Length: 307
Ligand SMILES: Cc1cc2nc3c(=O)[nH]c(=O)nc-3n(C[C@H](O)[C@H](O)[C@H](O)COP(=O)(O)OP(=O)(O)OC[C@H]3O[C@@H](n4cnc5c(N)ncnc54)[C@H](O)[C@@H]3O)c2cc1C
Image (cartoon, rainbow, N blue to C red; front, side, top):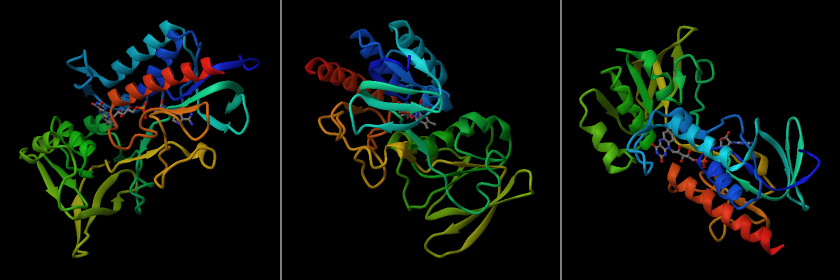
């Protein structure tokens, strides 16, 4: 595979990458999809998805397995692992994993985003020992136990609603004086007696017994007053970092690291396109990422035809 120059390499296998693959394969471009360390992307870490058209309710991992099966059926070839290096300075482009170096006439970057960490004392010590970004993956371990969720956006609301299946002792800690989640998500949480919200505050330290989280130190941002919450789990839901480190100084990005695009999908390098959460900090949905993947593949097809 590494001897020839491919038409198209797609980096990432979330909704954006897999949809791009389906469209590109059906245009006979024989795309290669490099899956990354998280095959299927962010939806692999959620339970029920209820806003994917055509499925009233479907599990995130099932939806992504369906998408991968669809991409495979159209002829997409998959390579596992991360892309570690790219060279977009000359054509054909070079895309390297730890195991091989590939060449391609066009590239779609669909590397998505990764949930942020707090960066406070104790977080690393108790990572995976009560500190997590995935309530859906780990929630079931905390039946009838107190849990803390950090953040006031959609992910935090989703995590809090999900945790009500297991416990009545849920505290959301939010740095602002208002939630930032969509109205519908907020209502689910605000009206739930099992969920308490502490505003204007954040978790500034995580303490434990050496093996597991035991307490969250919560600091009020206005008064600096510290409160200790007994908790068995801290779910961090404070936003995302775009996965663009390998593209630094190679593709234009904004101050937060999101790729900049023009005409919907085009990066500053002709022949390199971007799709999904890696450039879209506004919508961040599976359907919008899939739509962006479709657009990028159509633009690649036009670009390659024009060569
Ligand atoms: C808990 C949670 C619940 C959600 N629920 C919903 C929902 O119900 N409905 C909805 O529409 N959206 C939901 N979302 C949002 C949705 O998951 C994202 O908007 C969507 O997955 C973004 O798709 P993407 O393809 O752009 O990127 P991602 O899904 O982030 O996928 C990125 C891909 O890139 C790969 N990658 C990263 N770096 C590299 C690299 N160096 N080399 C190769 N590959 C790489 C990863 O392995 C991954 O496969 C949810 C998100 C979360 C976190």
